[in-house]
Length: 107
Image (cartoon, rainbow, N blue to C red; front, side):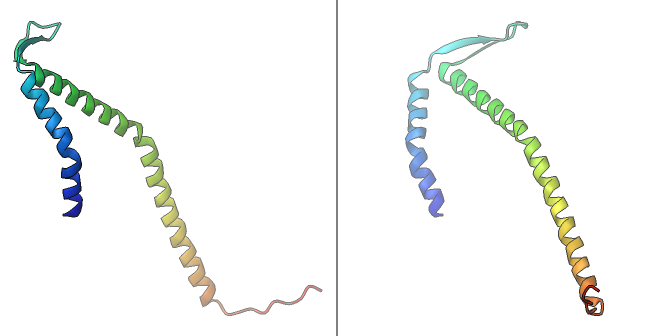
């Protein structure tokens, strides 16, 4: 609950700026997709915020894909470490079950 309160306190100025931006840019603009004849009329603020949101999502996807290799290597290393731990445990169990042998000094 406490972290939610801090998030609201920190994000409220940003939210206020977004609301003020949307209210001050209400003019309609026509947005077209070049290879087609598709034209959409939308408020300028909606077009800009939509473009920013799309850019954010593309950046997040790029970042996620860039970290995919290290995450896979870390997962593989964790699997190998678990296998080594299990092998060590079985070897230690086998060593304790063997009768203790006395070491003879070299002749």
